[in-house]
Length: 422
Ligand code: SDX
View 1 (tube, rainbow, N blue to C red):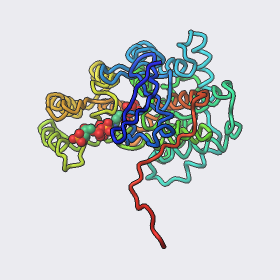
View 2: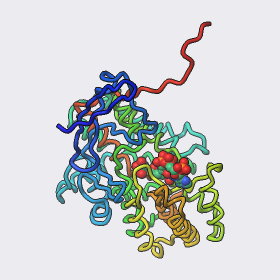
View 3: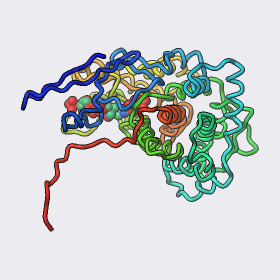
View 4: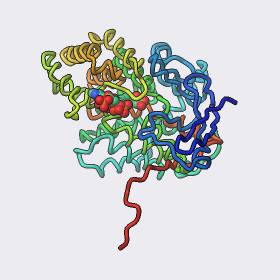
């Protein structure tokens, strides 16, 4: 076993720790015995150099800009398979045969209905409620309607729960959207595929024909696939943290939804479009790039930078290509696209961004496609939720099988008063 030795130069003491190797990627130093051996903690705010678990689901090479789900390259999955193929791959650790996919697809369609009682929850919200507030509440409320899933232990139960949540989240998303507009709810249509059905539930009006084009279904399905999984990002770590306490999956996924809402994470897609609209025209870009670089200005270029990718986010590359292919068909807002392209052009040649390895991430382009699909900004992060739900559930299941897993309970570096007397 490879080891690493650290020396405390205050007293010359040496401490040895095992080095564990992955199948691919950086080795890890096993510091589980650090406190017991040294009486010290590691210190790593934001976990920039910390592996929280072992996982076989997703691999990211941040330097090369590579992303693989269960070993398959994201660009192959996004261009040659559907989102449901990817869901099956993540959950079952294998790509489905035609028969397996057909059965999985039909199961998801049949599970896409929600209990009639759950709809009352949406009426409790004011018209101004953000769809993410309704979504996180509704997913947590699922536990009240599926209490048999509050204490599950067997893989078979995990898979039923997984399919149930995966199937119901788009319906809850459409309910959130329609509630925010005060328009009648639409039931799922099991004659339609997963992604088409979501667009149908968003757009349909009673007794009117609903127009949904194949190019729109393909674009949104690709977006779902690109958002499906991303190893231990902030919302997935939140899901794992909640799952590590033994809490049921609905609580964990609801917590993940709330973590994703932050503008530094999944909320960035909504902020990107708001920012592009605020910049407005290409001639204003330089002024905002200057603000983004100003250390005294908390303005950040939304859709730029990433904790792991220190190269182009491969998902941003695929979305940019999709935009090029579909911008005529989808009617992408050319002025917003021009502003985005100018930002990318300036930022990629500017020393500030180059030095910090800040590249466009998945959120930089997704909003332009979603806008073209007539999906309102307030629903952008909901779209991220629909795509990522399968990743969160897959990680929840992996954690439940993980013999090494313990309750997530980090320590701290205390900087408060030592002791005070009343
Ligand atoms: C997602 O983790 C995942 O996998 C997430 C995700 C997923 O699929 O789950 O990929 C989805 O969340 C993508 C990221 C979406 N967020 C945004 O686009 C928001 C804008 N980006 C940043 O806030 C930032 O880049 C983060 C949050 C994404 C990453 O932050 P880090 O890794 O903690 O980096 P940092 O904040 O320490 O920044 C390092 C430096 C700083 O400058 P200095 O202090 O060194 O001078 O880079 C600067 C930052 O000020 N910087 C930016 C910037 N991002 C970082 N400066 C201007 N604009 C930016 N966008």
